[in-house]
Length: 363
Image 1: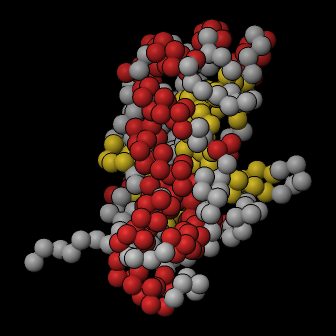
Image 2: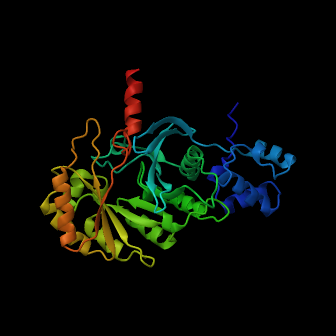
Image 3: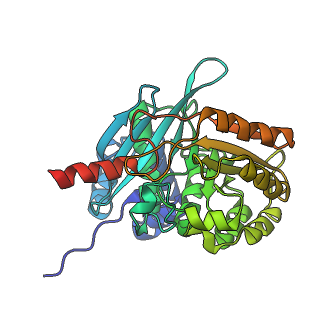
């Protein structure tokens, strides 16, 4: 006999989709969809039995036609600075990573930023990234992307959406978000729902290598801030260290960014990973100045490379980091050295999965 079709995971439904499912498929009033939505995303219910504001009969019916399935925690690593990395197992056995990064606000309260994965593996093949060495397996679903947030909130005990400790979301984990834009767009729409997690677009950043079509769609949506993973000031060097991203020439990227719609006080952020002896010299700094000046309203986040086992790259010296930053500032370019977190664990993208697979291969 053929296998029975899998029941739909309600994490994969936007609120309009859930409303359609509840009203058209199950014959219930619209407010039931909002109740279920709030139970899933605000109260983090993992079973229908927890939804006590819904009748027992309807809960019993829901059990027969849907599931609520979170990603499973495979491994957790916690750094001395509080950075916490999860290796999550998806329903088909594939594994992805998500990272929680702590920071103190002005009142001394700890607030958290989460880096989210959008693909299993990555097709960009960036030579400095552990995920880039894995190749690409598949896109993640909306439920798998959103499920990372549920795991993180549960870990943090973040049960009050009105006063969340998980404050910011960055689509900067495994994968290229704009190559999975349909699921990313639906995720962003779900995050913005006031009856759910109610994240402001100003607290969400999507980081991309610069996919032209996806950039246009993200800009039109207005659902998140934009960060561009640049990492090289010239097309030649970008092709060398980011072979997958180099198919979109820097000239086209600049042209697209100059037509990108920006909100009031919003700027495009360039992410620039400093690789020792590769892209961290005075010549590259001057090339970067020329490139960034051609883009309106931009700033640069300088990221110090966190070496991984077997990597061909090294971290730059402190002297070269400070020299690079000074050259940018002297030219009037806003540049900030992003404080590195989780250096004592496998915190960089893909490192935990690679190390886990290596250990399992030995075993």
